[in-house]
Structures are given as structure tokens and as C-alpha cells.
Length: 143
Image (cartoon, rainbow, N blue to C red; front, top):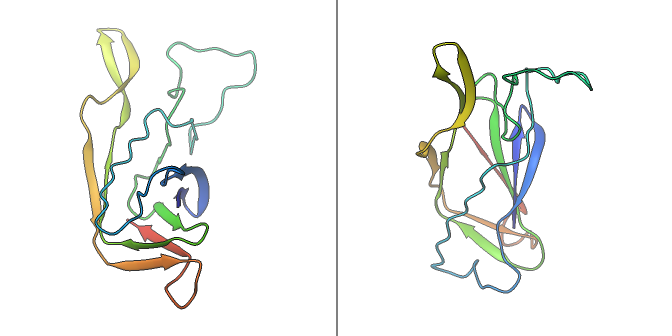
């Protein structure tokens, strides 16, 4: 099972949700997935040209930027691989935001929040399988 994070329909990153040597997709299984410091994928913040530096940088060096916020822009696409059947019963999402904070009266820096912020839950039960008689192979969760 993989989860693609999409911004405005474009895949930013693919995250692996199952582990080859664990029965983590078995009935009753519960798993928390923590992905920290994802690769930087800018949105409306332009890249600095090569050879140009700036302090502070106009963006952090990691994270998925959603300039217009998450709602209406972020989707999570779940895709089953192999011959597993997965029944999605509840997906809950929390995020760690990275934001500019004042470090003194005249300087700022990028800092990751120390606590997770709740984004939402998707509670609909859905069977996801490569076998069409069991369910679709892809399921998209949208905010």
C-alpha cells in the first residue's frame, strides 16, 4: 500500500504504508505512520537561482508547501499493490507545520512546530484491492 500526497492534482511524494515482513494489513491492525522532514516541494515560493544565497532563506529546506492551505488543495491517494485486500476504516491526519518565527528583534528563522496539529478524519469503510470484485485499487481522500 502506498499513499501519494497530491497538491492541486499533482503528486508531491509517495509514502509507503506497508512493510514487507509484517502482517500490517491484517484485520484489526492499527498502525501510525510518521513522516517527518519530507523532501521540500515548493508551491508559490519561487526557487532561488543557483549561486544566490539569502539569510534567512525564503523557504525551509524540507516539507510540502501548500500556499493556499490544505482545504481544497490537498488529497491523499491510497493505492494497493500486490494481492492484498485492505479495508480502510479510519484514516486520521495530523501535521507538523514549519513556519517563520522571530528569533530576535531583527531576525527570523524557519522552525517546525513542537506539537502536531489535527487536520481531519476519513471514517468511511472502503475495501481496496487489485481484484475488482473486492473493491477499487485506488481510493482518494480529499480535504
